[in-house]
Length: 158
Image 1 (cartoon, rainbow, N blue to C red):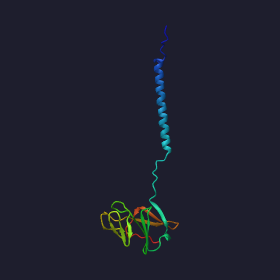
Image 2 (cartoon, rainbow, N blue to C red):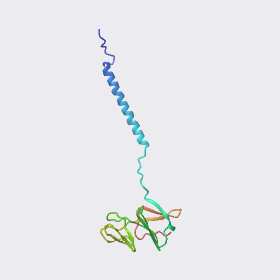
Image 3 (cartoon, helix red, strand yellow):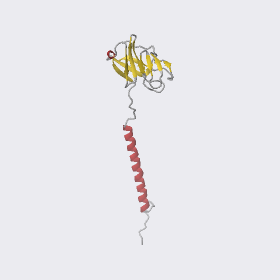
Image 4 (cartoon, rainbow, N blue to C red):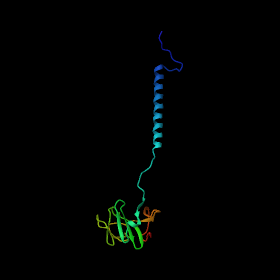
């Protein structure tokens, strides 16, 4: 007499063990997927970019009649008799920093020239330099907003 009994499930023992192991693997994979999704949910999906609105210092740091280049912001801040204004130093041709020369700007890379309002006098730059809005914070700091372009007539009277 041999011991080849068929259990009540109708499947031999080795097949039952294989199905049990396969079920355990599936349950383990589902658990790992659930834990990975939970961990990913807890990590914020945020881009950490610098703010496009920033303070450049107190108005007193910009003496009357001055033009101050802020290299880390690629920006000129001027204090004229009419008020404060900010002009981008990024050449509209290929993005070089323009130099302030007398009553205008010049690109040292490819020779574009701009007047005192940033308008193109001589190419290859296709358009004028950008002007940005300035405001005064409650702590008397000049604040530039790169998301708010303004016309060359803009002046902040502080």
